[in-house]
Image (tube, rainbow, N blue to C red; front, side, top):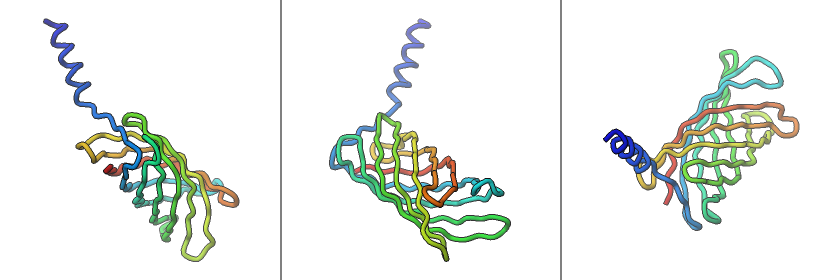
Length: 161
C-alpha cells in the first residue's frame, strides 16, 4: 500500500509539471520588472529599477530572436536619473528552462550611449497553456569604455502564441 501511495504522489507531481515546447513561427511577448544593486569600477553601490518589455519570433523550434526595450531609473546617493535602451538577441528553450544573450545599448539623459552584453537564464513556471511566470537571472557586462557589471534576479510574465 505504501508503494502505491508513493507512486501516486510521484505521478501526480509529474503530471502537474508543464513542459514548454515552442515551434517555428510562434511568437512571444513578455515583460520583466527587476531591481538590482551594482557598482561602477569599484565605486559605491547604486540601485537600479528596470522595466523591460520584449517581443520575440521563433526562427526554429525552441530558438527565438528577440527585441527588447529597457526603461530604467538609477539611484545613487539620493539622486536619480533615467536611462532608456534597447536589446537585440536570442533565447533557447529546453523544457521550462531557457538561456540566451543579447547586445544592449543604454542612453543616459545627457551622455553618449553605452553598450553591454547580457547573458541570461531562467525558468518558466506554467500558469496556463500560453502564460508563464518567468523567473530569471541576468548578468550584464559592459563593453568598451563601459566598465559596469550588473547581476539581476527578476520576475516577469511571458506569453507565447
